[in-house]
Image 1 (cartoon, rainbow, N blue to C red):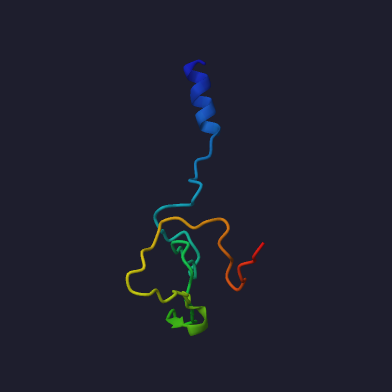
Image 2 (image 1 turned 45 degrees about the horizontal axis):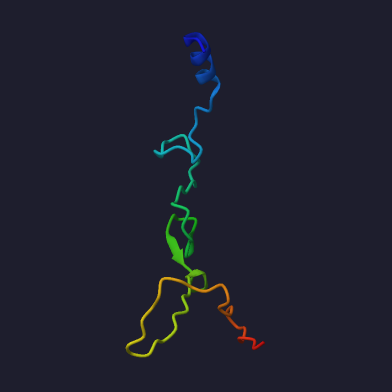
Length: 89
């Protein structure tokens, strides 16, 4: 491929990053909130104050383990899902 062909193909490629712009500029809307793709635990009111909504907070279910219980880094495919009892064959 010649240098001219290479340069012309580069000119046709996408000039905007796939994930969007990295720097916030004045070109975005006033109510633009970039965020980091995390769950929001509330919303912004009309005065630009963050209102925390308790029902939007993540709730983690952590079981109570007996003393001396060793966790393993693997979960078997046959492990029952939450709310299901283990079936006997």
